[in-house]
Image (cartoon, rainbow, N blue to C red; front, side):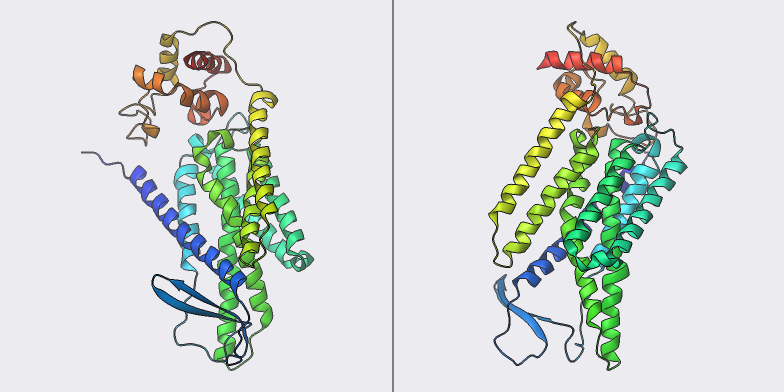
Length: 397
């Protein structure tokens, strides 16, 4: 019995990434909600308390308090929220290595854009992650730190710039995933480089009998708020590899901008709502941004990009079957011949007539619209061949 551990390792790391991400995002959402829901204490018993909240959950009552800087005395037990962020980033980076660096020729490199080696593509990918953090951290330390809105606009523009630039070099899928990793790296580095170290300095000052520096808490809070607004765009990108209409679009950088803006507007709605400032106009704005982005996506596929069309001549199924055999069955058959694959990718066995016919729309989307398949176009499928598939798929509707 042969056991290829790679796909199982991929599944295990992906599962860990999702679990850790849920824990991190959950705690982030909870604490932003908690901060926005705190109300001034009526009692003067606790000096330095900035606000408190009573809550009920799971059959019990909770009384939460937040100190403006720190309590007068350090508690014996103090929980630190950090490993959720660290494990999310570490598992995400491991996935990036397994999927996009080890198999860069399949998922990352687009030789029609730039003929890179696996090592060159991987090195460039890592370089942009480092560059993204350095630019973001520099913005946060610049005079822009005095204005969160202005800082957010500039950082958003930087992200879109990265998305555009990466799309000129990498495959659409690889470019989109790296944009998500740039954002995720900035978020995790905020925790590792700013939030936790600042909290440690506050604790150290208290243990030494000194007054903690309030600026440390203000800086950490700002980075935490930034992470909150970056969360929904990251979640979008985490699932984007399932949507070739997004990553395969020649203007995927613009689509990422539109959908990310939609997510941030919706996040802002909930942040305001937790402060009892309900603004349904934000939800309407978010919906309109989503619809506008979706319409632009459709228009860009149908008008702005020259796509292969089938023409008027009917394409016999035998021709399509031959194309599947030539370009697809190496990955999509019961026992794939492609090295590293030990099961039909996406569960499709395209050496079977019934499977091909049943998935005509899916094949059309991947091969003709997004041109995401064959992976890395390693088999050299031509535009004329894609046109044949387009014509055949149209006839199946």
